[in-house]
Image (cartoon, rainbow over the protein chains, first blue to last red):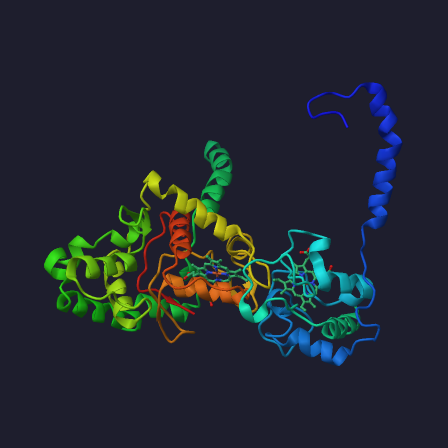
Length: 148
Length: 246
């Protein structure tokens, strides 16, 4: 590595190109957009719907809206959930629930299955994920039923 | 023709100025709640102001400060101010207690207790209608910077910062409620959800608990730092104490 501030010679620059290309390709392959099942058992879409629409469980409707006519108070900080199951695959939905920060570090959507990397968590919630693995699978199963 | 061209030229500037202007949470409230705040006979917070006026007379504040309408006018628009004894900012509630303990030899009033809320509301009410005017005292700069850092820091199990709601998403709806810009210009205020009066610190604790983070203890220097920052962010907004909020 040339030290910062010293311009590498043209030769070394060219000589490094193949490596840069390899790194880029490797980076793209490692960039995951999907996660396998957390439990190995399919989730229950009915339970998933209840989690999504219950304010204190899923908290989803704080930010999202969706095809839930009985829910009067829905948020508008995030894309609507209608059609989520046609836009995204099962694995893609799971990754967005488990830890959306892997795709967008700035996202306001909480990581529902991650308990590290947090700050000043209240004692009642410390070391716990927002949803359990089973609940994540239930929500994924439900979101897959939301088709345009 | 010239006028139209001028208007075209100025329009973006005016829009910019409007965007930079802080907006009170009052503007986002339902018309009934706004009416309740505007009408002193309907505003429940006025009961605390009246109670505070009685305490002002009874507990000897008037002995030093005389007529609050003159001596306390503008105080709430400036606070927190720098306090030599604390070598840092002091908020209004802290000053009221400092007067009691050091000048009157009386016990401090409990933070968030009714007597302190009443006195605080009465004192802040003397500045109703005045613009928030934080002092340009450089000794407040460290607290202001600490407050801003706390405002931007993500916290709690939901991993959200104050700024993500109150800067980035203000005006949007969190479930049913519009997110205000989060200004401190109405406190102490009557909140319908509390069915009572509360301080800015109570509000901040609500927001912190809402993201499942551990709130600081009442009176913690962190709150006073956040308040110092929020007041500079709200400069120019008119004080509303006692405000009403949903």
